[in-house]
Length: 309
Ligand SMILES: [Zn+2]
Ligand SMILES: [Zn+2]
Image (cartoon, rainbow, N blue to C red):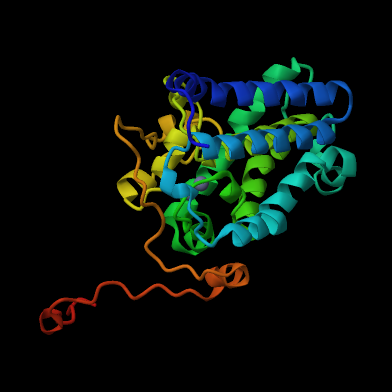
């Protein structure tokens, strides 16, 4: 199945990411136009998943990432129980009306959001504003141990493919939603903008984790492409503590964490801690895990008490 003509392979490697992004965004716009955004989003999302699953087989980025790692059930369970639930709630928020109850600031007249501007401009602004919260939520999750424990669930995978797109501890997902959409709420953005940002984040997230051989060129300067996110999953923190953006790389540029090099990102990805294999154990792990004490003093004999203290 992995025999695909070289020319077609190169062509697909260049067009897959932009084609799927543009097509899914166009489909989402159509969904809003016919007043069926949630339905069309779901269809577009599953078509994208199907295409990527096939491409992962016929033109994988890393062949060994196609090997079973025993985490498929845990990945799906995390997706359904945590991220999937949260994202679905947000995308369907306009249907369910939850946001109106918990965020009166989403009503017209609140905040500074320019609701009369063209929707395309509002969506662009929404992505940039939400990304600020997403960026810092992600950055802090890497630097602050209490949050890293939750984010480590996502990074504990040893292969990247679309099925671990939604592998997030529910606390980690909750943090992202609160920070990303919280900013839009405070600014007074309408529900349609929030739904758009959620849909774009879902599309981008799946593409970002897929194990498909792709080329990006200038796109990696602007967007969180799989190329950039593969660095982010590196065990080497000089590479892994970079590229915190979820959709766009603007804030990585602003805060100096954009990273890409003209070499292949590492195949051997993961974390230094040992993550239990089971889904329930992983849910509990962040609450019970204890880090070893900091490196002990080398020569305790020499550490005399400071007379000044
Ligand atoms: Zn991360
Ligand atoms: Zn990831």
